[in-house]
Amino acid sequence: MDANDLEQAEKSYQSALDKGVLNAMVGLADVAGKRKDFKLQFKLLDKYFKLGGFQSKTLATFYTGNYDFIPKDIEKYRYLLLAGAQRGDSDAAISLGNLYANNGDQQRANEYYQLSIRLQLDDVAAANLAMNYVNGDGVEQDLEKATYWSIFAAKLGNSSAVATLIALMSTGQAKFKVGFGPAAPSDATELANTLNDVDDVEIQLRVARSFEANGQIDEAISWYGKAAAKGNGDAEDALERLKVDKR
Image 1: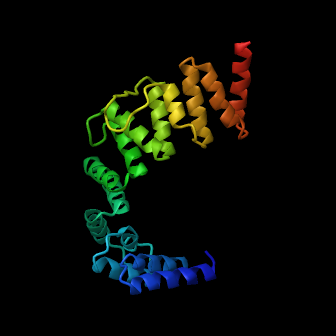
Image 2: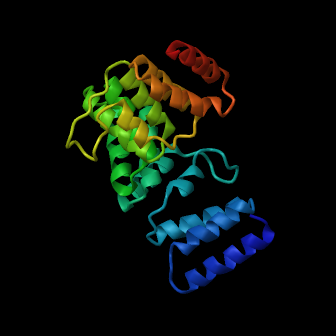
């Protein structure tokens, strides 16, 4: 945003705040942050939270030691994330989950990932849960739930979850269970239809290789073609090889 855009945004947020819209204070803080006025940003966010606002993640980051006017205070950081999560901030919930994960408490991390999903269908939290069910981190290993949460996150556009799901499929570990949460694709073809808009070349290659490994050559050629169209050499070589084999 240029200076004029920031000025217009500031006026709009201030007008909303004057009318009693508390969340407009977060918008004003965002404008201050874009102007690099971090002291004003902190002041606005701190006031907003003390008045009962629920968004706490950005305020919490001021206590991570990256700002010279506020000393590092991890307990304060944790407190603000917890308070925000309890008030309904999904970003605070996943940040709190990551904090627990980084400290080796994967069970507590999973609790906050699930809270983040309940609050706002968070794709990163779902992808994290999927990996934890794959590895048995903080939960009992459960490939049905790993498959489910991978699909859940993939449908929200998370490319990491797509990679997890393809890895599960290519090794025969994917466990699709009808009726467990949102409808899950039953095989690789239906999965490809679900993820047809994936634009990541590496993911396209994984999908193609999964199809090739399953003997579904036409589908493999289609997905290699997507990656080859973006100039990927491996995909181009695979296309040439498969076309020769089909002759």
